[in-house]
Image (cartoon, rainbow, N blue to C red):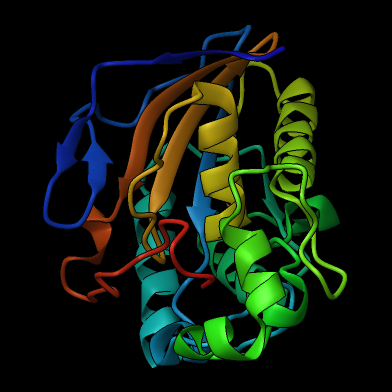
Length: 247
């Protein structure tokens, strides 16, 4: 079972739920540690309209492309990654490809296990519609029974946690002493945080946010969480992802 340390006591911004620390990017990564910079993809058209994506495709919008550029600009000035990984959904892949170009990485390695949670028959609806139109699926999503699958082919929260944590641990096992970048989704980030820390909430996870993790022999350290300081000029949706929406 994974163990967790939340290092440097990151502060929480009460306005938007952003946890940050003031450490600068490391000059090098300890030889027995994998540093994983987990990025939430840029804003999409469905994020902006409040439409539930799950594993359906939705394109980056104008702000999302600018967020991807800002992420890439920041990461290009930090320690060069050994590799860049991405979910197989286009909103993540497009964000990852922008980062790879600026960081002079030849390819993005696609890992399907990093994709967003399948939320069954909720996918494609506007958030405000689901209680009336898909009450069974809505109740399953909000249930405290974490092994309950969402009707319509959806995953349980336990299934999401298992594949998300396993994917990051597998990546970490390949990159001891190195930094890598992983582009994924709000649901995956939330699942990893809650699964590893056993905290009741992961706070708001913003589009284009950076989340830095250290993994060593299944020991996790969360170095920064939902850092969007690089998006000051671009902006981002204040509501973020906190488990009360499916963006």
